[in-house]
Length: 259
Length: 102
Image 1 (cartoon, each protein chain N blue to C red):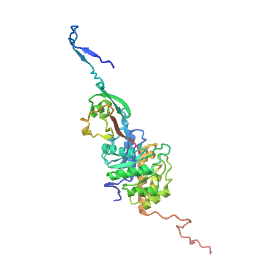
Image 2: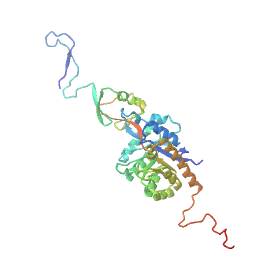
Image 3: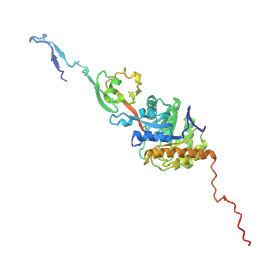
Image 4: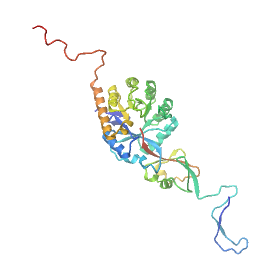
């Protein structure tokens, strides 16, 4: 079976879903079900009794087969990310942590230095560390070396829908990595998720493209199919690209010019 | 600071014959003991009853009906520790939930 292995966990779905920006908890749960995902991200936030919908742990625990991957969004430093990871592990019981350190809200680019430091500490404490990073092959290798479970390079800026603008660097990271490479951020449509899988990515993480779609449940299902199609295509061996035409039909004449 | 005193007995008018039970005790050169203390809850000042436990705090904030993590002075407080942990003046408490995020 072509499963995704992350630490001691095995997943049959290669689509990871984020839980942000949905119009309601109901819409989020419906999308999760429709996507077939088995791994979802959540964020840690201060309790506010006026925002009851913020508490997702109860509803998510009631779903079968869902593993939580808390992120450290809101952290600006390694220290804050490590603290968030400790609290999240206590609350969720999950060993996964998505290390997400992006202090600038305009571009939300991950801080590579703080990310590396947080990953080094958390991997040493036994977390299954999944860092959100720029598509930087050098950084990806450094994170693999300190014990990360995967690397999650961005396709483009979070929520931008700019797609796989980092495609060429992603290919290099995939070629050089011994751990799963999961494209995270910027994917806008299922065809882009399919393209990422055709490139050799091991999984994709999608949030805005599903949550903000007109019909999130249907979009989640479309993404699931696209990820499966891309993975199957990658396994099937995609034909090479050529600089010129290569005929598919014989070019010998069958209607002679003689009478 | 003025301490209020409550008379519980009769007063004969002679010094020493009246019994006063103070509402608050006032010790010179020491902080007055109040029934309330001030803590920091989720970044804001919050007054709670002296002797409140973490469980009491969760109840009065409505967080007892949610799945929450509790951090007191940078230390995660497990559910089994919460009934026995009594909050003190100036404790920094964070109550956290999992919200949507990518």
